[in-house]
Length: 89
Image 1 (cartoon, rainbow, N blue to C red):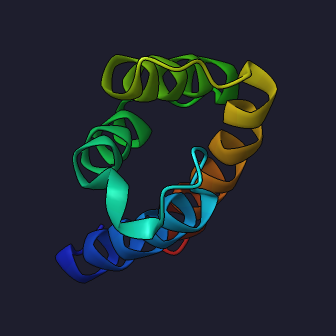
Image 2 (image 1 turned 180 degrees about the horizontal axis):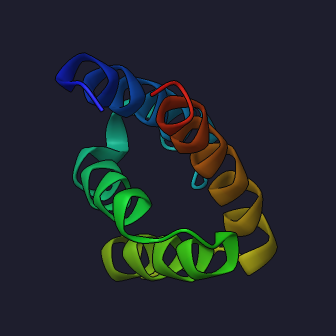
């Protein structure tokens, strides 16, 4: 996978996560969480595993719990982007 693909993928992931805005605080409010989630996207391949990790990341920062169903929905979108990029090789 070329560096360009990785950057492009990360950009798409950032946009999905900013748009998600689970706590309705505005797109700019999640920089460190988004960075952590992008790392997790590279580590996890299963939507449920990724969803649990996303849930933990946001909960650690905001002391608020996001329903796993909502996290799973976004994890599918994120993994779809990863698949798209890895399939282009």
